Length: 173
Ligand code: GDP
Ligand code: MG
Image 1 (cartoon, rainbow, N blue to C red):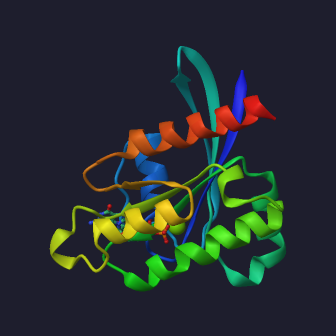
Image 2: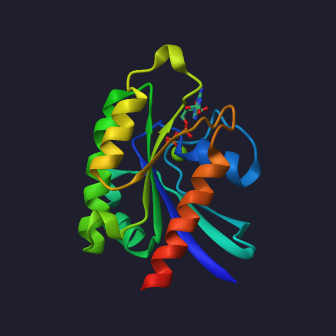
């Protein structure tokens, strides 16, 4: 079976663990240890073919810089997550994007990456507009999706989209 390694990155508290656990186990977690990095396997059917996603929920600790390098090198596709309620997490997106490309020594359009604006259920607390997310994604040649781990909005979409992009890129290599 095909395997694709998907890495979930982003600032602290944006919902990386919540997104991953919601997609893999269909549960909404509110008390996940922010320092824990964990990996999950999920089988999906992509265009009539079964494939296995190895999903790595990172904890994004700066001290693990060396480990981060290995993670980025081995990852096939990346979800770069921010919270729509936290502008500073949005500002970090570009940083993650550049780090990934630099470590892989590839251009932005050559790495499967999706910018994910999470917590879209918290509309009253919104600090980053949909348009801003979309503009950044366009600039960086990425797809953009807003999600909610709480309501399960667009989570299937986002993981299937990154799996599909990853598969396509591999086919061209
Ligand atoms: P991480 O540090 O990026 O892994 O963030 P977590 O997944 O631990 O989430 C941090 C907090 O945000 C937790 O209390 C989650 O329950 C909450 N959270 C995560 N995603 C959402 C979401 O889509 N909507 C809402 N309302 N809360 C969320
Ligand atoms: Mg976490």
